[in-house]
Length: 346
Image 1: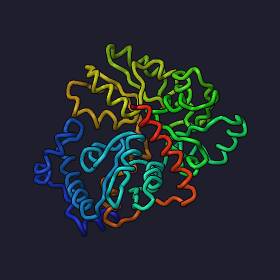
Image 2: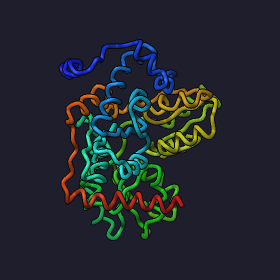
Image 3: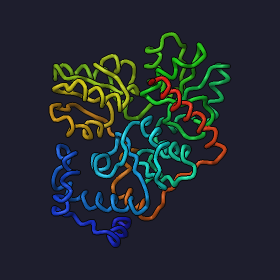
Image 4: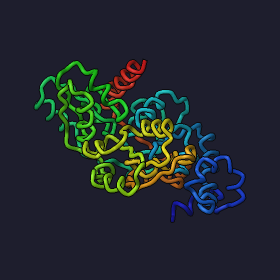
């Protein structure tokens, strides 16, 4: 409440149906999932943020798990972890506001050491990033001498610095396949590693036993029960789900892969086995698809709100810093991922 009061002393943030109507072009991207009264509440924040980011020479990078009012209302670039990492190397603005979780902001800072990188809530963490340390990477190296370490971007800068190369869910199988070793260590997501192992049978993939608190909640029984009650629904799972869940799905892919699949296939009904905001953010651009089924919400992603974004830009607080030596080492692993992904895409 104190934060809201302070912001209200600088910006007119009262709900405004009139402003909401003026910003109908933005609202059109989310009107299927955001009600008109809610948009009247959000619109003053969206307007204030969009004005302020121009004054600050700032860009907003937003992950696919952000709420629709962030994803469609204020983001300059949206995407999955790989897309945002690539975009972070291309932006020319002085300030990057990372609407995502802390490791994403760290990655942007690693790739842009001279820029100011802000995260609207320092407590926006990640169960995967918290599950592994640089010491754990050393332990895995001792257990599997000579095996390269492929580390998911959902990790701290220190863990990236201790690794050989990073990956995302969209490029993990390609990167593992490209490693010049029969054995490959993957950290920290055990289920992504197990799903990759099925895609790359020529490699021996070993893993750290971390998991995502959102995706590990789904069970194959959930999917079978939902399919029985909703025959014909296309079930689409993220590879952070267990292999048993992925096996029950019609398709598995990263957040960008899920968007591409649904856009291409245009099923009449779809269940996205991932974080809740995914379906909300693409529903208006796919009016012929009915999104059904349960979803699990990431409590860390949902710490990022319009109010916190506005405060971050207003006060220029929430700057993310990475110790230079760690950043230099981590940058090597991230840039190897980006470079290899670009080469493999050719």
